[in-house]
Amino acid sequence: MKIKKITAVILIICIAVSAFSFSAGAEESESADAPQFELDCRSAILMEASTGKVLYEMNADESLPPASVTKVMTLLLVMEAIDSGKITLDDMVTASAHACSMGGSQIYLEEGEQMSVEDMLKSVVIASANDAAVALAEYVAGTEEAFVEAMNKKAAELGLTGTNFENTNGLDDTVANHVSTARDIAVMSRELIKHEKITEYSSIWMDTIRGGEFGLTNTNRLVRFYKGATGLKTGSTAKAKFCVTATAERGGVSLICVIMAAPTRDIRNAAAVSLLDYGFANYGVYKNEAKTLDPIKVVGGVRSECSVSYPEFSYVASKSDISRITFEVELDESAAAPVKVGDKVGRVVYKLGEEEIGSSDITSDETVDKIDFWGVFWRILSRISMC
Image (cartoon, rainbow, N blue to C red):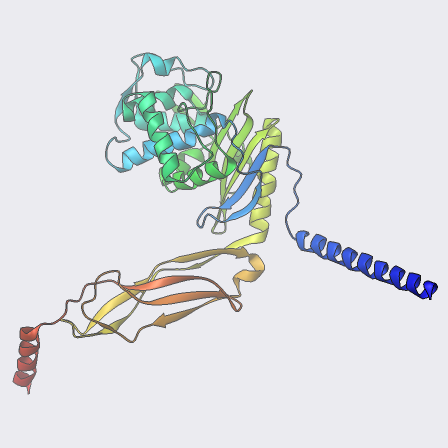
């Protein structure tokens, strides 16, 4: 009897061990699909630009010194000032003593020197000029301090919870808490590249200013050596080590890769290339363009129908899944007046296989007021007169 009991106990233990081993093996198999990189850096992230979908991340929310990658936010605010009409590319900026006192990468502005906004922008984007960054900030906001306040306000608007700016250029010898995260930098980079003028500059390898007398060479070597590279910003200090937010586009896929605190420039660039290669090799973007549909009937309106449409839809998926994405249009047969611009009259449902992955509202493109008594009266009268 004792032997039977011992045998039963051993059998139970073996089954338990086997079950545990199978479970552990299953977990290992599930995680095997995740990309495995040996990145020699403190944090990293890979994001698809049109949708903001994160394709890979490593320690992406740790706040770290960003060095000159800071200038992504500086450039974003300058571009917004241009878009709003506050300043123009042709405006002449006068360099202050404070701007000229900046060290590090610079174009050696002299106090009182005048240079166009466009040439200063190119100097910041291409050559990471610290002096030009401060000069632009002062021109937009009056002082660098006021501009930094605007930078932090914009960071809050974008939801950048791990970011705090103390200056406009990323010099960190005297700062106390000038930090950002890989995720935050990817988000602000995504905003910046919406301004096409920026990637026009950031994809330039070499240029000149001051009438051709001063050369600019891009600090981002990927622009020259990586297929599809469009920018965006590098940075390095002893404290921050080597950082980059790299943008590239191939075959309709636009990627943003951020590398923080790599030990050398070459290691930083190699890490960025690894992530970009992974993104381009494995992912595609499904797009359904915005479309105006046939008008729908309006009941009780001053007009009998109104035009309707749905917006563009984008979705990032593995290349093998792109062809499996379908969509269905669910549209009301009619709408009761009054109908206002933007009123929902249906939706477009997108599916990957049988799984719903997103939807877009179908909305009215015009307003149709409700018909009143006199409107009905004259409509009937006009029909009678046509008989």
